[in-house]
Amino acid sequence: MNRLRSERFSASLLLGAAVLGLLLANTALGPWLIGLQGTHLGVAGFDLSVGHWISDGLLAVFFFIVAVELKQEMTTGELNSVRRALHPAIAALGGVIIPAGLYLLLTSSSGETGGWPIPTATDIAFAVGVLAMFGRGLPSRIRVFLLALAVLDDLVAILIIAVFFTADPDLLALGFAALSLLAFAILSRIFARRGGPILGGALILLAVLTWGLVYQSGVHATIAGVLLGLVMPALPAQRLTHRLEPFSNGLVLPLFAFSATLVMIPQLPVSELSAPFWAILIALPVGKLLGITAGGLLGSAVMRGGGSGMRPGEIVLVALLGGIGFTVSLLMTELAFTGDGPLKDQGILAVLLGSLLAVIASAIALTLAARRARRTASITRG
Image 1 (cartoon, helix red, strand yellow):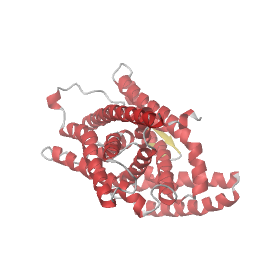
Image 2 (cartoon, one colour):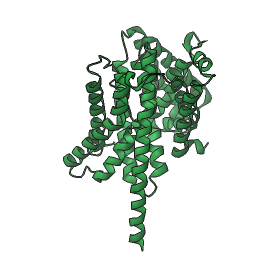
Image 3 (cartoon, helix red, strand yellow):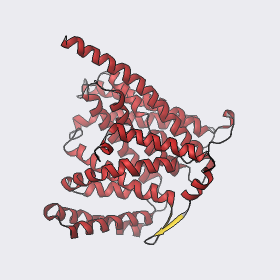
Image 4 (cartoon, one colour):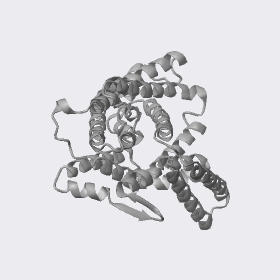
């Protein structure tokens, strides 16, 4: 279990699952696996495909953990005051605006501008894992700044999913979802004081009911995970996330990565690849690098050092890591290009390639910076 909580191991597992999905999709097993992904399963009155049970159901667990981490950071962590949150917030804002703008610029003539949210996301688990792999010896403030930025980035992604990927919501279902969420919030506070298996079982039923009602409303069902994480009291929420983390790292995220990357590589000449493919491929690593760097430097100027103590070179390192979109970018691709299979497949490939470029660039930069930091530390000690 402890290994599944390791940042390095979980990042490796996530990458391995994505590579396996892409490889198998382009073998003789590919059509069968893609067909299995589209097979519908009826559970408790819900009829979803296997792929949607993973992206709408299991992925809600990941978003629950993200919401608990966000709430913790905003109450007792690195974002618990306006001054402490301002620097990573400005950097995160730059890391959303510039990639989205770059995507819109590159796709304006094609008319395929709906995928603008795809390059705005940063994968917390993957980015922190790469930092742990290659950044040994670097100041801890880099990890702290990256976590704060990635958490804020995910908050923006959650808002984008809720606002831009919801059409004609069922207000009645949303109203019942709100009542179910309120009951969950009240009961979870009683559970925090008394505990017990009966209350625990009731909380699980209310959580499932809230998820189901959010799904029925037309809002993406992962938002239910976010809402549940935000209303649950800190102590039981943290205990629950500690238990769920191995399940999320070891099953939910790899399974989603595997399912999302079951894409047959299109047999197209480079000249026929779509504008969204090139826009994502460029906007994810390059847009994030430019946006986070510009926002981070602006934040340093505004805050006179930023309060975080981040140096310009360290901001660039975080910006390189920010280009690893992966999990949330893959989800955004599915939502943005629903109904257009070929475009969705190209978008997924672009997310994988763009994230891979960001991984390679950040790994090289981190290795060089860490080597220099260790050498400097050795000289200082000597």
